[in-house]
Image (cartoon, rainbow, N blue to C red; front, side, top):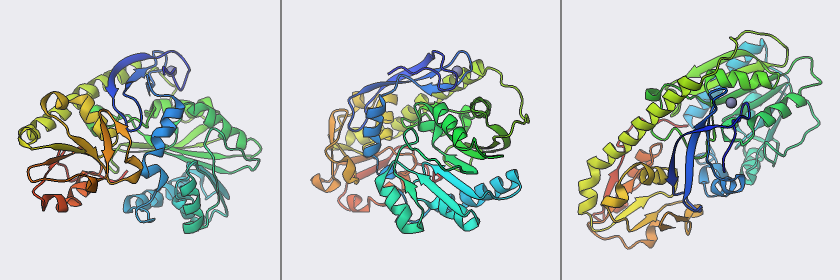
Length: 394
Ligand SMILES: [Zn+2]
C-alpha cells in the first residue's frame, strides 16, 4: 500500500525499501518515503490497516501491557515530568483529561492522583481496558482513536506515542479539536519519537509499527493545521531508547513558534545517512559472530518479531548460515510463520550440544540472554548480536 503525506496529503517519494519478513504476514516490501512539499517522512509502501492490526495482535506488549502489572521505573519518572511540564505550561492543572491510547491506565491514574477529577481513556486493547479498571479504577472506552465517540468536553487531551502509529493522524487531531470546541480554552499534550540526527538514533528506529516520523517542525505544523497553538516544547535525546519530543498546545490562537519551512533536503539527508549507518551496523555485528554460527550444529533465531525481520533484511545471514528454526517464549507467536520458519515454543526443540541460538532484539537483548542460562547448561551457544548493556526502557 502506497501512502500520501500524513501531514499535507501530497504524493511521497521513496527513499529506500526492503523485503521484510514479518510474523504472521506474507513477506512484504516495506519502504520509507518523503513528501517533497513539506519534508515529512512516512512508512510507504506499507501494509494495509487490517494487516497492521493482525500484526499488533501477535505482539504481547500491546495486548498484555505492564511488567507484572507494574509500571517501569522509566515510566514513573516520565510521568513525574509530564505532569509538572503540563502544569507549568498551563499555569495550573486542568479539571478533566481524556487520554487516547490509554494502555494499562497508569498515566491517567497519575493525573488523577495529581488532582484531575475526571479522567477517561480510549484504548483498543480489551485486556488493557480491564487492567486499567482493575489496577487503578480508571474508566476507558474500548475503541480505536479512529472510531471512538464522546459527547463530553475535556480540558486536556493526552496523546503519548499514538500519532506515529495512525494511518490518518490529522483526522484524530481534528477530532480532538472538535471535542474541545465548546471550551473557552482547551489543551492537548502530544508526545512522539523524534527524528533526530542519525547518530542519535538506535538501530531499528524506523520501526514497522511507526508509520509517521516527526521532527520539531512538522509536529508543530501538524498541531497548527488542526487549530492547536503550541505553548511548550520539550525534547530528550537519551532518556529513553528513542529520542522523544513532547508538545503542549492550546486551542486559543497565539503564535510563539517560527513559520514552517519545508524540511525536504534536511530530512532526506538524515534518512539516507541513517540507512547507510544502519545497514553497515547490522552487517558488522553479524560478522563478529558469524564464525560461531557457521560452526554450530544447528542455528535457531530467538524471537519472532521486527528484530528478526531487520536481521534478515539488513545482512547476508541467509546466504552464509542455514537457519533451522525460529523460537519465542510468547504463546501469541507460536505457529505463526515468519519468512521460511514456523515459530515454535522453546521447549518444543530438542536442544543438542553444539546448537546455537541467535538473539537479535536490541531493546530486550540482556533480559533475553540472562533468561537463557538453561540453554547454556545444555551446551547450547547463546549468541548476542548487539552485545549492548545500556538499552533503555521505551
Ligand atoms: Zn507533506
